[in-house]
Amino acid sequence: MLMKRSLLGTAIAALCITAASSVSAQEKVLNLYSARHYQTDEALYSNFTKQTGIKINRIEAGENELLERIKNEGANSPADVFITVDAARLAKADELNLFGRVNSKILDARIPAQLRTDDWYAFSTRARVIVYNKTAINPAEVQTYQDLANPRLKGKVCVRSGSHPYNLSLGASVLANTGEEKTAEWAKGLVANFARSPKGGDTDQIKAVAAGECGVALANSYYVARLMRSDKPEDKKIMDSVVVVWPNQKTTGTHVNISGGGMLKNAPNKEAAVKFLEYLSSDQAQAYFADGNNEWPVVKSVKITNPALEALGPFKAETINVGILAKNQAAVQKIYDRAGWQ
Image (cartoon, rainbow, N blue to C red; front, side, top):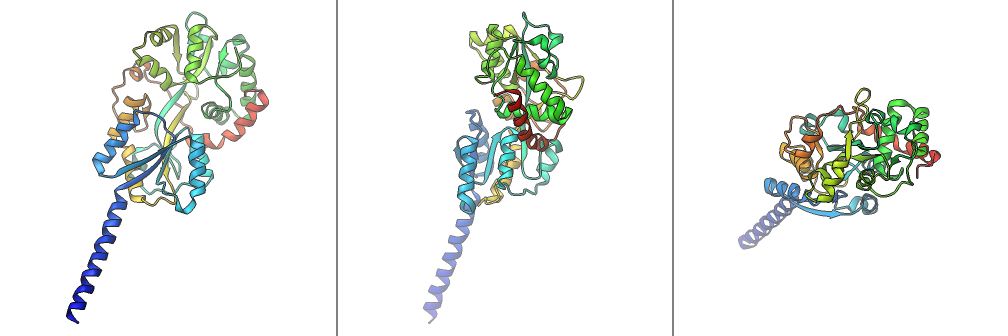
């Protein structure tokens, strides 16, 4: 009888150890679904593992593919955190009710109120700037987003597709600042000034301006900074031909968009998820967003050593909450469609 009790006790102890080990192992893993496609993020993730011992299992794909996957996986989804670029894409995840609420004093203290919602957080920002050809355009004529719709720029404006989130977010900013009627007038005037049908990405727009195919274009700041930091002679030649403008400095400020993420409501490793999100707001990670991918930290006290961002200089940024920008985008798409901005 004593031997049976001893064996039973040993078995129970072994089960307890196994269970504890299982929990411990679970806490050491983070399943990250990422729509950020930057090789420079590798160091960001490896540093997190070095600091915490938590291994990151990462799945990278387009945001639509990842969101569909998370939705289909349902309660059995292994995903802990979803990160992507642009407020619209984060809002889409929110609309699908995929995010879980995070209670973190660290995140609330470090991330400005306008750069977070109840369910997701911005961790870096990028500005939508105007780029013009220094020999073809009078700088006084391209100081605001509204200037790009002025008839004097007819046949001189290059942009990418109106359905792209970068331009939808810009339109959402214009809508929040000026109302639907003026936003519709702006979109119509902008389309009337196109030098060509929208095509390509932001870098293509900058190249077109440098080549004289158009006089002025819109681009996200990190594309500009990437060209500025390039050692390629052709990229240096491009940047020698163009000038960058911070739009709307005397009014609402330059439109900024974000890269961000949140914890998923069915996350199996919630503690690790919160630690990861808090890590992204740390000084080290924030500096890496700037130095690694030419984005600005959302934590203003963080010092950066990016020569391109320093060369671009300080600017007045808009203060619209990113959640409002995200919610406005469906209305903006309709405005663009009516204006013919495909």
